[in-house]
Amino acid sequence: MPNWIDYLQWPAMAVTLYAAYLVGSKRTDRRIFGFSMFVLSNVLWIVWGWHDEAWALIALQVGLFAMNVRGIVKNE
Image (tube, helix red, strand yellow):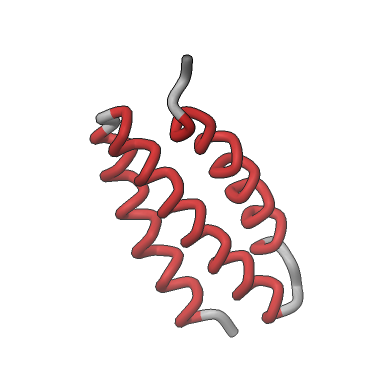
């Protein structure tokens, strides 16, 4: 029987896709919300990756997290 955390990858994937959609918006508030959703997806992927010992995925998500925070700060 799969552990509940095995299913975490599906909401992480959905949040990532939604964030990508929002970041493409012309409206500043939607872009900022999109970057915030990317931050949430980074956290979800890190939790899932930690459980599966996917260290490269965790390293990628940490780097993307930093870029998403930068996106929030620099958004015009």
